[in-house]
Image 1 (cartoon, helix red, strand yellow):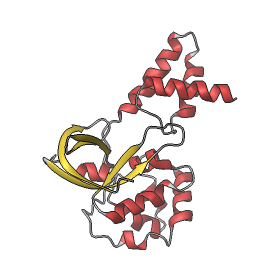
Image 2 (cartoon, one colour):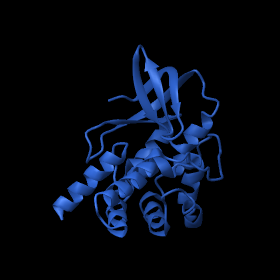
Image 3 (cartoon, one colour):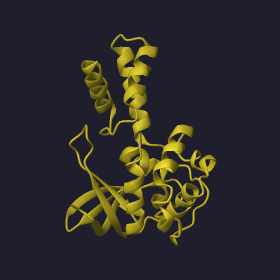
Image 4 (spheres, helix red, strand yellow):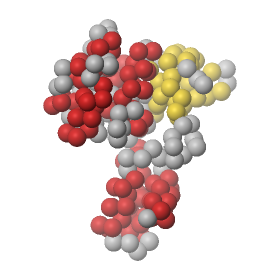
Length: 208
């Protein structure tokens, strides 16, 4: 289990909101929530993160998520376990400071929660129902205090979804049908690229 990583920042990838960290010659890609990416906008040469090592259910490729403080990592773990969330959606949802989001949860401010990427009305209900009373410590956190919802960097996976639709259309499927299939796997934790999306579509169709 990798719980902390420190080293030289080599490549900053805005599309994925990730940075490659050189630790003694081994490079680790660390995915950052939007609030953390914003805090790192100066792109320092040396970085250190508290990390969460995650292996998606459908894909064997492990992923490292990076956080500035242990309590933020703990909040992420709570959030990703909310019904219909998962790690990928939780990473995108952290577009304000953890203290701000936790405050919204504790005060049942569902309208504010709905501003977060990927959090609709129903998901906001789930978040409040499952986490209210459990994130008081995070609400009191002294962090960067980003209260507005930052716009995340355009994820490369959005392009992969579009490319997957076009690939299915080129294979002879109707666009509406192709779009519905891709939409059906869009919330799953997939490896980068259109090929991973197509594999997920194929697997879902094979199971139906």
